[in-house]
Length: 341
Image 1 (tube, rainbow, N blue to C red):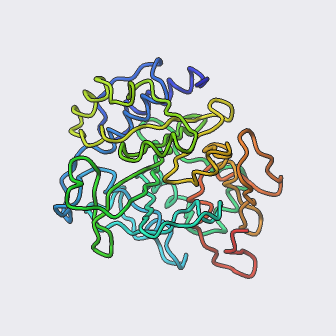
Image 2: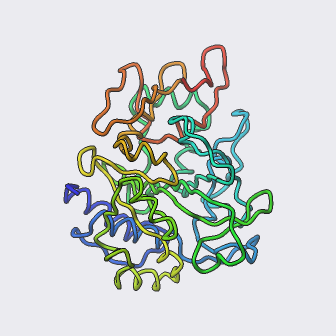
């Protein structure tokens, strides 16, 4: 991946200094794949919390706020957020896959999507009152929407996909209980890591579903954590150090920070496999459409062709953040619209 040394150095430093207690030293030679794994291990390390049941894997990011909590409705209510984390495990709130609205793909009946935001992301939204759509529009018009990217205060978001699980999933899957008291197992997830000046996207899939990646015509690109489809010793050592051996059952499909290398990146348990086969899935290209106009609408999103997309100049950037683009609500509906397009 032709990511600049400056970007890698910044991301590496951020990972070492800012990601919830990461104790690993960083260097400018770290690849995006290594940064993705080190970030994941650091934000997943076990935590003790009230509210966790026997079926809950004690990953730290389960204490982050979900998008449903950060962006409530109506917008006149302040989000129920007093700190950087929930402070307790709660049943996961399933919602429809966000890609469904963009691609028109059918939503599998047993799937469950939950989007998680770390303290830096949540704090940024709260400080700017970005659960109100008019505030987001005003900032976007001034080109000032920029999620935190500094050491000690770096935004990380995770889009997680869960399937119905069984009692035998513990130890090989990250597991949880949903709000309907059904057991769930984590089958795939995207991570957005805020570097400077760009985001780093990384997407993971459980080893049991790895064949879906090749069936979709995609390949795995992970020179840090995988060798011949098996976890490397350095990955196993990293995960053991964070007491997160369960993550060795997940495979990193790849990472992306730029439009050109790699041009394609997708996950068949998150995006439609047929679009991956057609070469129409690119994280960075898709997230470029996270924009908003004077009325609160976001830019139309055609099937994504790799490369730098053309965005109508009447739409303003939201720093590649679709959660912000899609979830905020208007107060004055006479001027502002909650219709996304």
